Length: 158
Image 1 (cartoon, rainbow, N blue to C red):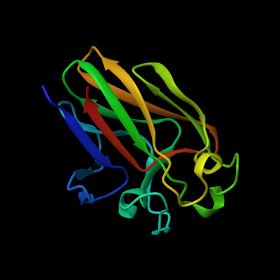
Image 2 (cartoon, rainbow, N blue to C red):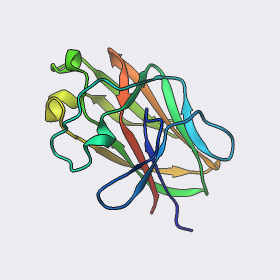
Image 3 (spheres, helix red, strand yellow):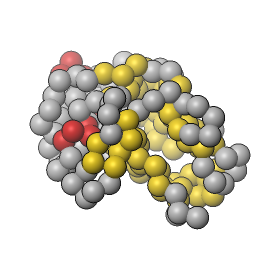
Image 4 (tube, rainbow, N blue to C red):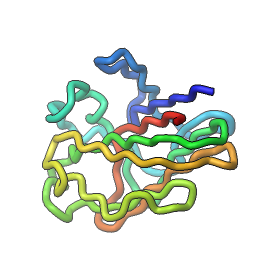
């Protein structure tokens, strides 16, 4: 079974990227679908994002601590790509925003500092593999410094 879900986190409308993929608007989780639990949407104001042709995808965020995104999907193994760019000028400094990510109860990203990795207003995606056994993928974001933040999430069955 092919499964792909793309979410433009923090966005209120769908977005079609340069490859023709549709990124669904962010929404609250409902059983049988996808969405966020907790966190706050934000459009920080930076609109020109380096290292991508899909700037719009990185201009909205959901931030907080903790918060999560859930996806109802068939059990199996998935590749999850987090679309990340530091788009808040006050957080454009090493150590200003640091967070952890767990999936299905396992920490998959430790001490993420997007600015330290790629700079300000620059796409710096992170990808991990996870296995779902209960029909719902849980991706949890927890703060180390400031608030965790994510711009987009792509989930693909592998």
